[in-house]
Amino acid sequence: MDELLKDARRKHYAVGAFECWNSDNVHAIATAAARADAPVIFQASPAEYGTMGGADVLRRMVEGYVAKYHLTAALHLDHGSTLGHVQECLEAGFTSVMLDASALPFEENCELSRKTAELAHARNVSVEAELGHVGGAAEGGIIAESSLTIPGEAVRFVEQSGIDCLAVAIGTIHGDYRGEPNLRLDRLQEIAQSLPGLPLVLHGGSGTPHAQLMRAIRLGIAKVNICTEIHKTYLKAIDEAREHLTPSVPGKFYQPVVEAVSRHVERLIRQFRGENAL
Ligand SMILES: [Zn+2]
Image 1 (cartoon, rainbow, N blue to C red):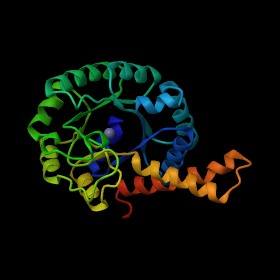
Image 2: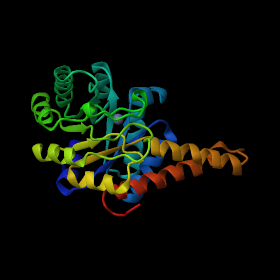
Image 3: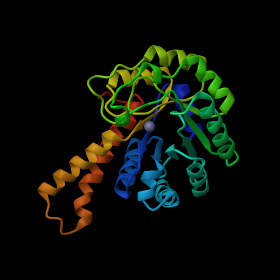
Image 4: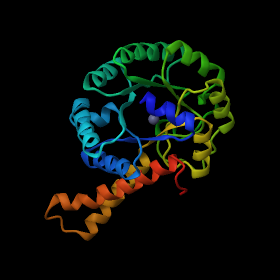
């Protein structure tokens, strides 16, 4: 993943990282990347690959699509919460891992990220960590000033932990925004300038206004995580298919669902590369 993101940061575009929760949605992400003819990141949290049969099952599934469509891709552990998750995904053959210790104090987060980097780098696998804390439903959708990434700390964190890319808290949230978000691009600019060349990651990309997202990418965001947005497309497509079809052949019922998610993912991949405006 590191190679994809370093190129993205250097050339001021971002690689889309899309959440995987079942085979239809993995198929949709793969066909979208093939249509856009661009790199893509498949990612899953332990809860997600858990429902798919395990990290090793997801890796084989992704590998199958990567070979079929000749994709340039990474497979990333998103929000692992223990070193056990990291180990599991390293053994399964993921090419990138994240242990999210962002809710812990600085030194503990740094130490866990350093241990993760030690394990991952021994297998030539990339490491993402989060400093500051990107909240979500658990925090009531509120973005506290105190949860944002502090630029000076970011430099120290990266030096001490040895990670490859840093997820920053600059005003996005996991899930739906309440009202219009206002990304702290001033803060992002400061972080990016103090860490030249290091790819930065934006969690909670879903629903972020296009103009703010594109400015964040120009400033140094090289990976944009997307889950909520495409999950909504997936659910809406199922509702629509249910209205129009008598599902005598289940495969046909899900075809328009895969297509809808694929078109949505393709649009985002192109958008993050600056190819089109939404
Ligand atoms: Zn996240």
